[in-house]
Amino acid sequence: MKKLTLVALAISLGMSSLVAEAKVSEAEAAKLGNELTPLGGLKAANADGSIPAWTGGITEPPAGYEVGDHHPSPFPEDKVLFSITASNMEEYADLLSDGQKKLFETYPDTFRIPVYQTRRTASNPPAVYDATKFNATHAELVQGGNGIKNAAIGIPFPIPQNGVEAIWNHILRYRGQAIQRYGGQAAPTAGGDFNVIGFDDVLMIKYAEQDATPEKLLEENILMKFKQSITEPARLAGTALLVHETMDQVKEPRQAWTYNTGQRRVRKAPNIAYDAPGTAADGLRTTDDFDMFNGAPDRYNWTLKGKKELYVPYNNYQLHSDKVTYGDILKPGHVNPELTRYEKHRVWVVEANLKDEYRHIYQKRVFYIDEDSWQILVADMYDNRNELYRVAMAYAINYYEVPTLWSTLDVYHDLNSRRYLALGLDNETRMYDFSIKPDDSEFTPQALRREGLR
Image 1 (cartoon, rainbow, N blue to C red):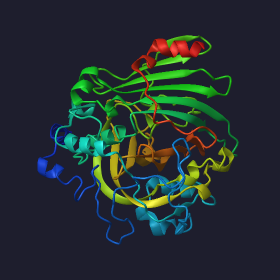
Image 2 (cartoon, rainbow, N blue to C red):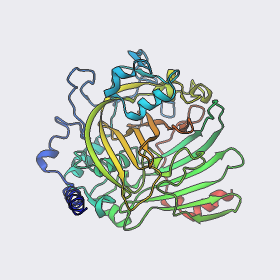
Image 3 (cartoon, rainbow, N blue to C red):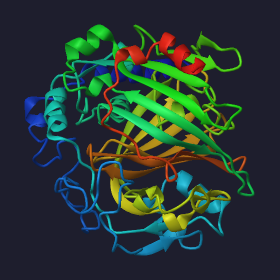
């Protein structure tokens, strides 16, 4: 026992050292934009050329695209190279996550991964690249990794030294300065029946604002503000949520409020965090599953396992199209494979293990994070018996008007119930609006109440 205690202490001191040495040298930062992409990925192709070199991603939209359109594919002529199925899965086992393999086992007759040519389409505005280079030599973790300082606008840790830095890169990846999202989610039954829960979301990202500075962010201690209203069905319409996400989550934890139409009251909601059930999600995701992972990282020990090549959802413009319906997408067990696209990409692998002193329904989580955008693309979640429990995948596209690579649909598979939640359905609604300029006064409990009473 004494020996184990000494080992644990050594590991703890090692992790403390990693947290303290967050910044990289000027020489390391100079690699950004040279052998590394501006966000820290490897620019070069892989050994056999199946992953090409990054050449800037998408910097101009396809001909005919107008802001407000559902984003058309820039590669309409691309064809499926081959498909991975339950029968040939073992040939590609090294390029699949354990969760993806489990989906083949669970749905052997229907689940399929159609593989396309790899297109490294991720891109951001030049100002984000400039800010990322600054952050590389200045950004620091605080409070053992439960907050950051000395960073703004860009990726905080483009050359990550540990797992918690990599997860902060996902949380703070660029998605514009403010977004209004329309659409919803559905949780099909095992037989495929579903009802859509409609959402109207507004996200104000203080960290990404044009005039954001590390000093201003530290003073205000707010990273982003999020407001969500349910628009359908009628029995839930008007229910609303407001969240203020803090920069130092130990100094001041996340602040959240809910508005209930039945009570016509705004209430503080301190439990909107961690493994609290997600909004109207039939118990198929946790609060910190939203956006693949969000919130304070303090309940886990985070380990950066390195990089690997993986078949991941990427450039899913067909799944995003307004030419398909929700009924076309939502099938028993999983979304329609005919509409999905997977490509081979390099991903960072980050493993999160629950600390002994905390509880969460996930004992372990493994995240596969795109090297070009820091978007989590695949997540495997394990229960307290260390058995695979859930598998989540983010089906990404490039939103040309920003530009940014972000998911068009997040899908959370519950392996025990053989059900899934599809979050981000937008095919039958208006497209996201990245041009809005909301005011802080719109993100107060008083504003939430006024909107609920209308």
